[in-house]
Image 1 (tube, one colour):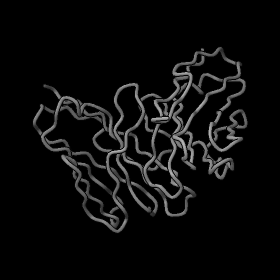
Image 2 (image 1 turned 60 degrees about the vertical axis):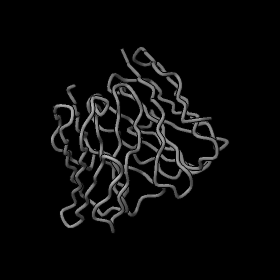
Image 3 (image 1 turned 90 degrees about the vertical axis):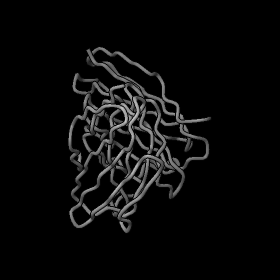
Image 4 (image 1 turned 135 degrees about the vertical axis):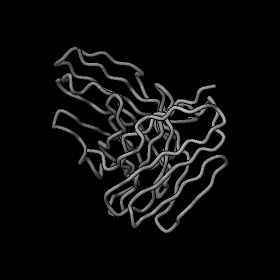
Length: 113
Length: 113
């Protein structure tokens, strides 16, 4: 079963608005990653934040991590229609071999032009 | 190759049939992962290879599922006596040794009828 819970499950916004989604997880982690999945396509890595980091930026993306609350948030600023996709958080547990990822259920984002 | 390649993209199997799904990872990537993604959910880990060694198969749902990577490059996920609950998208991902970013293929959508 999946470790993470994502909130909200779905989000509909207008182009130009910001989109925020949250992820909670259960076990100790090495890092937390966010992926995007367009309809019928594979997952694309967006950003990684390590357990000793609190905030990270990449272009229009901002990720925060609160290990005391076992939660993370992804903010997409100035959204575009092309940002329409499902967004998944994924954690890499400390004890796992390799980089085995545990995914949340995803947030489906619709950006209306 | 340029990315992770999976074949076939779509597979329809009659219940009870055996299927084989192929994954060509990025050249030189040591780590290879298989995930199962049910409709509307996040991917769930199935199994992990480092080169030809299968180091973790804890996510395989039953003994009908078998994966191999005999030469440490191409991998095959085999499902015997398929059941309707096996219907899902099967995703393959690869990464460098010690790498944190996983590169995903576009997946194989399996429908068992």
